[in-house]
Amino acid sequence: MKTNKWSLSSLRFKCTGCGKCCSGRGDYYVGVSRAEQRRIQRFLGISWRWFRARYVTAYVDDTEGLRWEGDRCVFLDKNSRCRVYPVRPSQCRTYPFWPEVVASVSSWQAEAKGCEGIGRGAVIPLDIVRQRLRRQAKAR
Image (cartoon, rainbow, N blue to C red; front, side, top):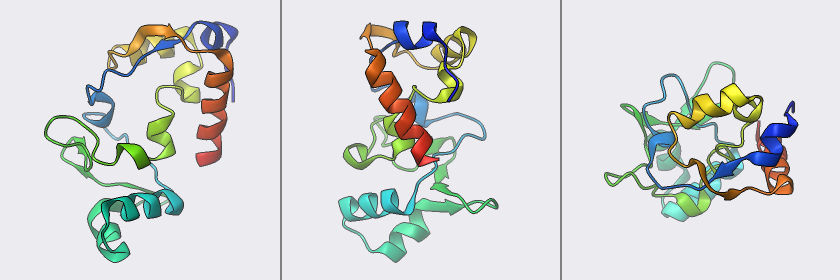
């Protein structure tokens, strides 16, 4: 977990709910563990078999992710709101505090071009940033 002091002491982020992080990201995907899948499946109140068939994609490296429809996460509704927000995967919960995003000034600034919430709001406390980075590392 390589991070720089600048990034951990001066990050500002306030989600605007725009949904851009859930769409149009090229070969980006949302990894989802079996435990996360179960939480989402129960939240939706559907069968495990239907959930897996409808919403999960298996990858050649034995990981699994949420299915995308076109250039959007399958759970992003027509108003660009997440239909499973209370039980969203760790990868979603920790955005934009991913190691590759906070690794340098340039990577943070590059991510800000696609996320209007970066640079907004109060500075996120250092302990919160570290906590989110640890959570993301565990989820991988």
